[in-house]
Length: 315
Image (cartoon, rainbow, N blue to C red; front, side, top):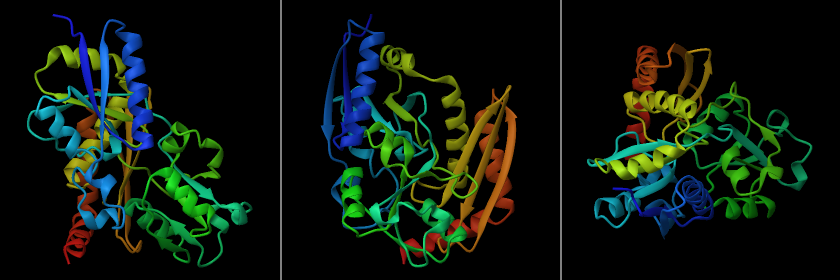
């Protein structure tokens, strides 16, 4: 029997709603007889804004409340920024579809007085705002002379703090800025040699209840095969390292001919240790490539780095 109604759970932040409304519009184009509604809500990560993300705990900060709605049969799907979705999902839920990716790079955004600077030329002690341990560790490794300060709130709030002079610059996801209409604020796309991006960054993940084949069939119309293969490799790499979204783990993927190339990084919080490696393999086994890269980094000391971070976060 064809599905006639679809209920979407979403965070109510501005970026989340832009992304969810895009999914709704695309599904309505593909399935014109489908009635689609959105249920927006705040998650734990949206409510606690005066504490660094890494200190709250990183598993499902922006997803648990949406997942509860599906498990209680109050929603059929949830739309997430894929980088926020843990690699191990609650029993009964699956990652049903991965959409085409925006540019996954990190971006430098500056205020008026720093327009002449790039990341490389920022003066000693310049205040750089980021809430990501991954960005923090990599930038500390390359630019130890800069001053890094946590920044929370939605994108607009962060930009207001930047423009008021609280920060000299911010590091944000290029994809989020573009989706919100702030592409003109991107001062510099940070090269991957400096900052590998987060797992899944730039893509949307649509989560659904396992076994609801009619729902899965509907959302598969938004699946982007190349993005999916790249993101499955990245998520497998993260899962094998047992890292959450608030751990200094970065990636970069590309596909050449029928080969998937995955680069990965693990760094210490102080930026003094950073391990990078690259593995490649056949497109038909993206998750195997992720596991292979994770094991390679484990052999080079990644486990010790991550254990040290875990112990620091508990103390």
